[in-house]
Length: 325
Image (tube, rainbow, N blue to C red):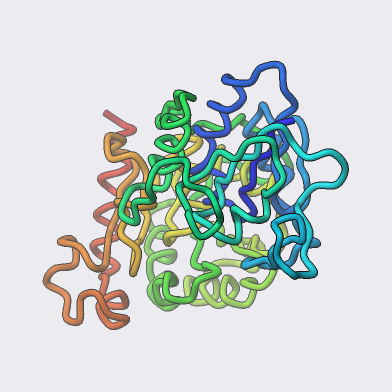
């Protein structure tokens, strides 16, 4: 068994797709098991090649306690039961806790972490792109990975409309949220241009999505936040005309399905989490970058809020023009 730990969110899973595909190709006869939250199951199916999802929900949010098998006093446990895996791959972090969660496996593929007793592996680089990070890790262990292999399987058409423009104002990280009133103005102006706008989000973001839709003059039926599971959200994005979102999972779905997108980055540079730079139909605006260099307070909350709607609309035009050419 090859056990891979990636117990995070949508964007984290999407950026790990090339590494997961490389592990599948490098171990064709082995069972490939992904330790991740159960709610990611529909997206894991769209990655393909994963034989089994091992839910990490009972572990609680990281950082996790160190398991007794790692030689520390703790009430934790490894994310598997029964025989230890032949190979464990840490696509979760640099350690030591995530490394020690996998202690007991026959072999650990992970970044170098002497505090966890793991002197093997390459050194961590804070500044590299998340996709490149995990491809480099596997390359170091002799498993070639293709960083361009980002596509997800296309879900079958469902109950949701096709050809819509997806506006996603939320993020689990508050600092990554462009102001809701600006999203509302943007959605209204997109609708005035003939876009069929829907507003997505998690169940916890339904009030935010409703506020954006109301400010845009959209009907309540345009609010899909909390009304889709992850598989339905992927299907919605796969068949969309356009996606506008912050630095969050929906943007990675647009990348996976090659759907034109405008992604708004605030505190985190797109060089670490953005779409491939060679795809002009994905446009990135970074509040700390040159696109907003004239805005006051760049790099701060006020600079993030100062990202103008007109600049976002211009990026929409640029993204859609690449599709028409």
